[in-house]
Amino acid sequence: MQSLDHGQLKLTAVSELSKITFRNTTEDGCEVIDAELKRLDSDYSDLKLTTQRAKENIQQKLHHWVDLRKKAEVLSIWIRDMELKLGSDHEYGKDLVEKKLLLERMKVL
Image (cartoon, rainbow, N blue to C red; front, side, top):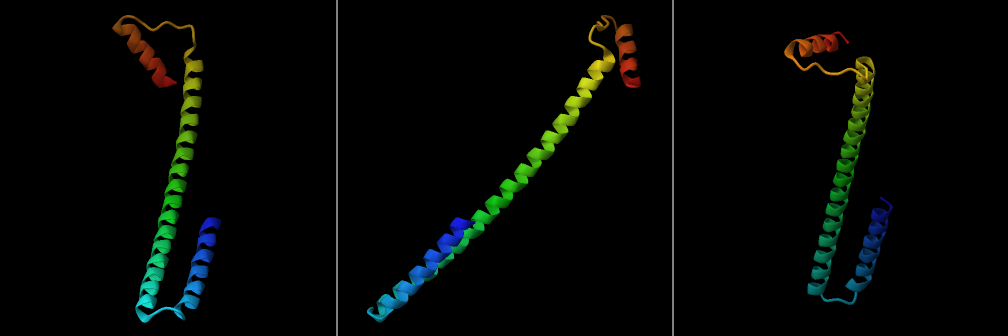
């Protein structure tokens, strides 16, 4: 945001210098300078708006990443707990009856 403030200062300085220039410029030249100053001011306002939107977008995406990281951590803890409850040395059944028993055991956990 500090660079935008710096930009506003430069815009103000250009505006002040144009007032000095107006004294030594024809009417047509003054109109051109005035139009350019208005365009410059409009472009700067658009830049500030675009920058603000980009900042808000980045903050929103960062917030989503933080939420995702927290959920991934909870899932990781749950998986670790399930692995401990199931035991690491059991062998999964090879026939349908053993798999069904194992599934029932996991549902109870």
